Image (cartoon, rainbow, N blue to C red):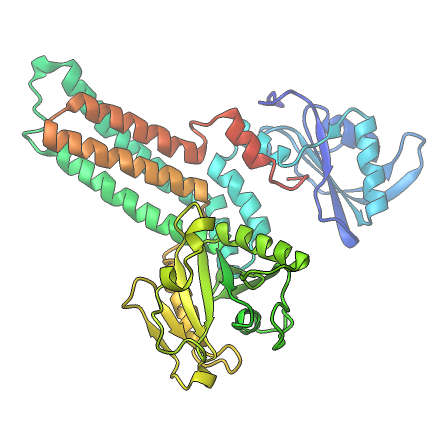
Length: 460
């Protein structure tokens, strides 16, 4: 028997395969009318979880195509509702005709992510698993795909549920001691709460470390290459990407717009942005390129400031000294590494120096000397560990929730040790629960759900 949808009760339909031509294309239908619509189009009774060879017809009785039909009655389906899939030949015209026929029979076009949203609202998956679906589709590396698959199977959610359970047990213990003082439970003196709280903090930090690796594998790092004209920024982009993405000449101002390249270093996605040379210019086109360059720099995760080593030998290589205008344009602190390029011309050996306020790498983008030092540095500065530590995918919002939960635990620990304030500890534990609940959707707002599912593909 079909369970009612947690949404509006409408039956939805969409093309569930990628746009374009292919051997197979799928129309997915979910809702109370799914079985009726499927049986009308195929003109046959649909048995649950059986593959039916079907002919697909329109209202006029014309044969549109033939293929496979699958019927999954709710609640034993992906969305928790009745679901029908029509597997036709993968041409855009035939799929559009089948979708129009499904809508004519009572379905409506699904919104982006609405199938996954219904699965979440009908308790088939939690929010972290729903996001893992999109992460799996959008994965750009093998490691990112494997991590997303583990999250979809519930690996991340299980770790969060374990944390929530431990916090809940501790909160119950503390609140019981507060509410029933006649029991004479001195949780400060017996050390039980202190020990449990430290254990939870340690476990959360371990999960946060894994989540950071998972987020890095999924979202990667935005690396912006900046510097004055003719310092070798475009050559560095080409050297990192391994191809001639940018035009390289000896003429200043060759790069006038933003260039982007997506690569991976040992499985870590890297989004590289090459920008126009930063200098004073009266050229209107160059001015626009410089304005766009500052916009990209302001949104970077890390900045590579490229300078010409052949003309700066012996100079003080502090970022604030050679790039004083940075603070005038940036509203947040972004890590900067200095790349002293053209060491083949200066005669300097390729070397990395991390003894100053920012790391300095001497290299030659033209010859490739020192490029390995740079890639190792980029992995290090992002906290990347090639050790299999990240076992699930995560997003920045997950990191924020975990960090927030950790802050509440640390605050509660201070209240316990410094003031013996059980009531304040109980409140911090409650806030920690709430922060962790945002990850799996146990506690979530309509605005958050709308933002998450709107980024999904239509048909998912």
